[in-house]
Length: 117
Image (cartoon, rainbow, N blue to C red):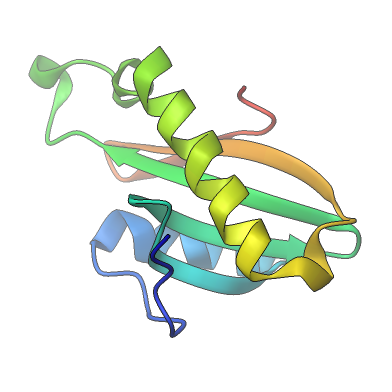
């Protein structure tokens, strides 16, 4: 099982905006663009007893569909596997309440669907 060793910064502008959205609401970014279990986690954030795995999606324009439509059942399964692998490498956080959010950027606006799946 491969886990990226360092906390990196978000690469894509939408990921940077999503990280900022969470920071403004009191979350601490624990990891960004990290690989766990063979899959990438866009953001891992924490506030209090809540640990949130965030999938960030964006589209260039309305002609390309809705960003939330990109989170397919296969993607959900991959995110759950990656989160499990990340938690195994960070056992001190395993007792926290887990949540999976999707942050979708549409026309420059960030919409966060909490507890998306």
